[in-house]
Length: 533
Ligand code: SIN
Image 1 (spheres, rainbow, N blue to C red):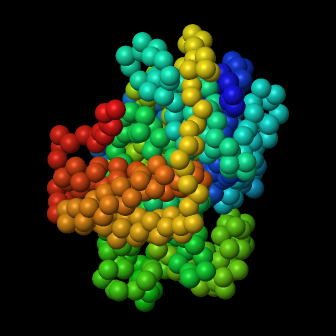
Image 2 (spheres, helix red, strand yellow):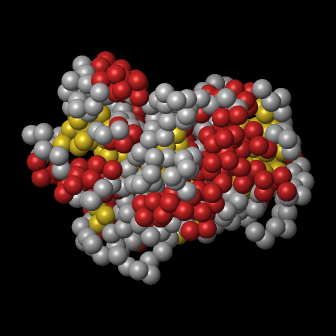
Image 3 (cartoon, rainbow, N blue to C red):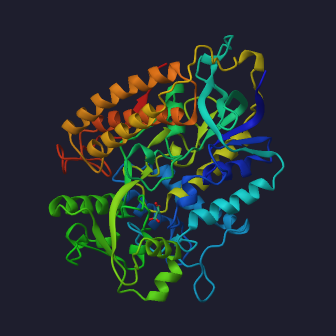
């Protein structure tokens, strides 16, 4: 029988997956499953930085206040306090494993501003902070002999008692591992583990325009939902206000740190507009800036607004934003000479698999951390640069919880059936996958974007239901490939986002409905969805 066994199975190799692997490696064998290359993750593409209290002027209470304010009254205060107080220790640990953050002329860590922050507290590695952190963590993890990384392996489904050939007398849902697809060999096999961590990042690919890489298809959330995990707050999909508008550039991120350094959003006639929307102007929280730009575009009928840095000192721009400078230059835009055309694009999933303060889900042995998890720290709108921090803090807590438990049980592999390929056809119609995918993205972008309404959500729901049924039917009959798995997960995530949005009869944070506009229901809390299996 073809299977693997390990102590700890981690799905996903971004900051949360790698940091938890590193922390767990003293307690047993770890397998990290990742869909493409080991570094490919949302983390790798994070530009701006990691928010953490590092200056004398700052303190965790101020970071807490800014996070709660951005979160539109929905942050879990306890979880947020954990984030801001434990964060600095983990950022120092990154320094100790070799992460090099940018420094000022005096050799001190260069702290910058981003939207929603009232103090300079963003540590960065020029404009490629995520890459710096990802590569340092990878190099650490690869030096540890009991961590094995399986590249090019996709999560198909979590294994729970429902898959086993014999009942194990567990009344609560319990996870024993996962079925995975080896994309190179087209082979499907189970990996059995005592503890399983989902850290598969977000699902930006559910929209037409996103800053996320192709792999961001919500695999963790979709699999957890199918297994019976509680899913929270999926309506809060964050759109980054500024991505490059260019026919050849696919939603390339223009970091919020650009506005932190003094970049100004302007209409095409050169008029700044953000002060008309919020007292913090260009550094208002992200939901407000994205909505303001959306409003400007609707009013003007233009395809983009401008982000102007031409008044800043040219060598400073080139020193701080070399990646952005080069990317824009390659498309014929010299950002030191002319303003950058920008539009919002899908960026970050604020909801996800509900967890407690230790990454535990409602499924026994199953944990989630990073963007996949809903720890409560982002509420209705994530504060800029809190995501890498959340990945570290809650990966550490997850690892601690696992290490403190007596977790000895692995089912006999004979109880776990091999994947049944009987009756699967190898269709000639693979093109249907891209048709369905384009339809999902178009529906989500047209009806479930920055501004929503009851009518649009109902329309989206009806259409997604149809596609969902088609995809599941196709999935049940067809040989499994990675694109098919991704399609199945994306349609599931789309459905969860729409259902969550339909249930929130108010405007709050990233969920803005023209039917409720300024209404906020003071007693409305998290949106919770469970698949009762
Ligand atoms: C950015 O550089 O603007 C992204 C930072 C983030 O999403 O937190």
